[in-house]
Image (cartoon, rainbow, N blue to C red; front, side):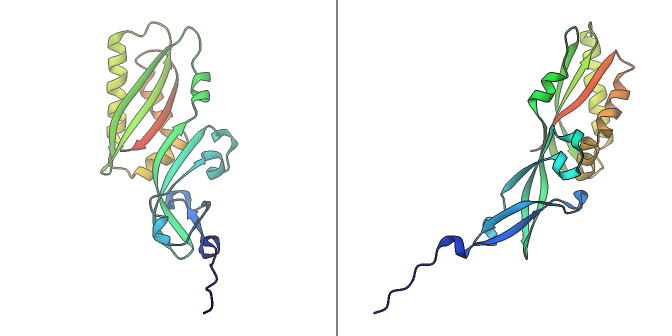
Length: 186
């Protein structure tokens, strides 16, 4: 009786390109291996915005994508999380400034997200002004609730949403910096 030769599990696996969503022009994020394409669904990949946009100034932004569909040699993804490195955030708060952290839930075209925003402002921001700041940020996020999540992520990565929040808040008190620290799908 002849023995069957055992085939290495590595030889059975195929490579799949992990592709960014359409809003990032289906750019290749990386490569993953699997013997069965169904096993790839649900995997996540985290990539620096610098690598995604080819802009060195965005090296402190990280984007996480989750694989949703596998077809042929490519694995399609959807946005899952945006974060800013903690070292970068710590470098933006200086002495003699007030730091305000805003955490809330926002919905974009039916997708629920959790948003964290850090505001750095002048000394002496009163409790009433902090409340006004929170209400203003909520109203700005509510004004974008009809947009697609991918469009909002684009606005955050390229700084348009942070600038919009800054211009809305500078009438309340002296604001130095607005950073959207995290956007996470819940």
